[in-house]
Image (cartoon, rainbow, N blue to C red; front, side, top):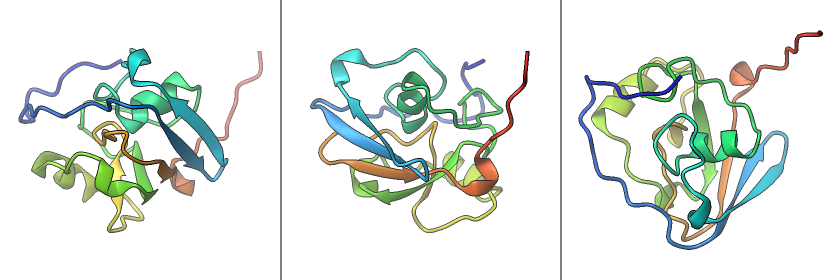
Length: 135
């Protein structure tokens, strides 16, 4: 999917300039991120937690395609939140619709780490899709 949400203000978000790691909970999977490989070409802002997750094969639901038009990609940033861009008012409005909201909640499609430290992001239980289809 992907695209642009014309109702959101476009903001310039600095990209990571050095390699870093991001650990996804509860699967405890750590991904090494090399800024030279970004963007991964998936949904969400370039270099966002969602972009990194999808590039590493970690599925985070994102019904709107990562354009900040829903809250299905909600994550809780347990470590390293200060290294992510600030949430915009548009993102905060969307976060208000997410169940299980915490002070360190972000939409993974909008949160872009700057690479200065490791990140730990938890995918809430209600957002983990364990279903798989058989062929």
